[in-house]
Every structure is written in structure tokens, then in C-alpha cells.
Image (cartoon, rainbow, N blue to C red; front, side):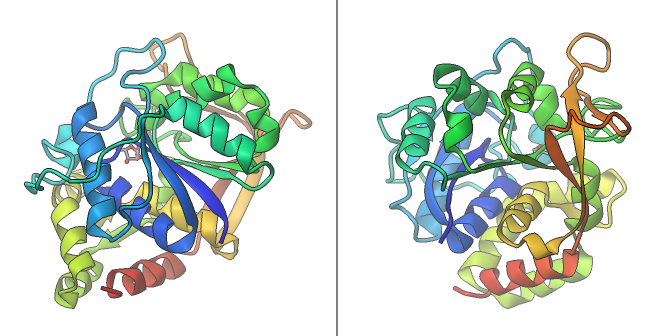
Length: 304
Ligand code: BDR
């Protein structure tokens, strides 16, 4: 199986992405970064998720608990107070590793040169700092998958998507570094990664340990997404994980020069150059096969 690290600000949909990654890839570790909810909650959520899904052997590494420069705010309204839809989870027995996330990213990419892929479903702080520590990771890491950025429909400011908005400097560093990058932007995840009420009924009726987990952790996300006008809960991190696994489910992508705005009122916005050729630094997914994504998710949730 392909080797991945999931870089995560673990809350609701991140936990489902961790579940998918643990089933579809050889998951070498989960690194935690500041983002969705309070840092300690995110750590606990990742540890508990791995325990719950029977993957307690996957190491969790503590990363950056704040962005490089930015002042950001957490979004409990999206994921619930603890990031698990308000579901009161017990204290996990599993503990994080002593080695820090940046060191682990550098070490694992050195040890798995040309093989390791990063699944960055979070602000890019950990990856940016790993790159600054050891620029050779650009050569060592095979591929960086990023959930982040929005063309025009920002979900945090009118123009900025949450992950880019939390740490725009980190996004800039990663985009400019020279990695082989595929971006799944917010609009694509809204359009192809939404689970509507019929999916929810189906999942609820499964009554498996994993379907129960899914329903509990994504309760607040469902309410929030519907308030925003979606037909169900939006699953950006899970969709990105699935597309990383199954490239045949990427129906349209295009290479662009992608940048991030750092200075103005639109700070954190993804900037996409549609016309200039020869400076492309990332491929952006425009269309995806949502059926394939749902089917895989449903089949994993029904597995135990
Ligand atoms: C992104 O922000 C987080 O709330 C989600 O987990 C996802 O990574 C969507 O903008």
C-alpha cells in the first residue's frame, strides 16, 4: 500500500479522513496542527479516533499549536465544542509520540524517499516548517495532497477558505517550495463531497460501530453545512483522501500557478492564474466522481 502521513487539525470530518486513510493507505503517522478547535481537543480526537477504529499502532505526533504569524480563531460552530460534534469521548489510553511532528515529517520522508505522500487536510504550518527545516523533503516527498483554498466562495471570509486563512504564510511557503501538489479546493468539495439526508439515513440505519462514530462526530457539521445552504454535510477532508487514493475519481483537473494573498482584506484567499503558462505549481481538482467516493465511504463504514 502507498505510504502516507495525514496532517490534521482533527475535528469531525478529519476523523473520517483518518479512518479512510487507515483503510486505503499504509498510514505512517498523524501529525497535529493548529486549526479547527482547541489544540488539546484535536490531539485527543486523533488519539481516540485511532483507538476506536482499531489502529492504535499508528503514531500521533504533536505539531505546531499556532500559525507562523497569523492570529486565527477556532471554529467550534462547525465541529462542536470539542471538535467531535459535542460527543463526550472518554480519555484515550493511547499517548502521542515524544518526537515532534516537524521532525517526524523530515525523518519519515528521508526514510521513505520517493514513496511518502502527505495528505494535508489542514492548515499547512507543519509542512511549511518541515520544509524550512529540511528543504530536501521537496525531493523526498512523492506528492502533497492539499485540501484548501477557494476560487471565489470563501467559507471563512468572503474569499478565503479556512485552511489557507488560518496560516496564509504557511500556504505560501508550501506552494512556492516546488512540491508535486494537487489541491482539492473548497468549491469542489462542496459540490462533490456533500452527504445529503438520504446518505445520512443510510448510514444511520447501518448500526455498525463505525456508522455510529460517523453520526456522532459529524452531527454539528451537518447542522452547520445545512445552515450554509448545503443539502447535507460537506466532507472536504474525506473527499480529498479518497481522491488521493483513487485518481480515476478525479474527473477534471488543471495545472495552474496558484498563490495566496497575504496583505489585503482578502488575506488567505487562493489566487489562481488561469492564463499565464509555464509557471504552474499545482494541479487543482475541478470535478470529481462523488458516487465512487460515497460507495467507498459507505463500504468502509459498514465494515465493522
Ligand atoms: C477545511 O476546514 C476545516 O474546517 C475542514 O476540516 C477542512 O479541512 C474546509 O475549509
